[in-house]
Length: 191
Image (cartoon, rainbow, N blue to C red):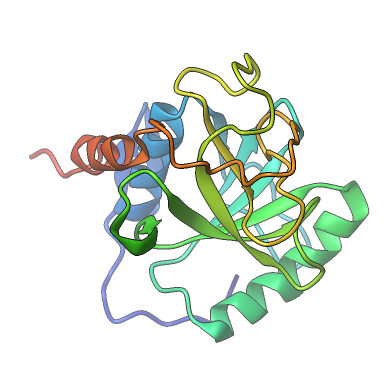
């Protein structure tokens, strides 16, 4: 996504043997790893957009864009560049920022970012992260049972595809705050 100028310079950082363009991207890679989500860094270029990551989920790939600041303008540009890819391959796209957004001070119920595609409203939706409510005891949501779903649409888990009519970020022992804190520690500069 071109056309954005930031006052802070990105600090190239290596995580899991992969050199990334910024420490923020490395932090997200560490978080995805903590969630036991398989990822690929800078998987491909399209006409107008090169996603920062692909998350390889049982319910289908999710293309991820990392931006330090999420403004309405950034969301609009993200929708414009990601929509053609999402529409053509039936995938989902996720825009993440500098941190998780913990809702109402609750350390387990959080928003991971903004998404378009399967299950989200046509113009995009906030994406919740927490414990999978789609299939109780679901083995497809790996490890910590961390899952994602649109916050206002049909609540289908973006990890396993499960659906129970309730938000998949049910705020029960997902521990996403600890996973995020650990990711921040794991991606810090080491001289």
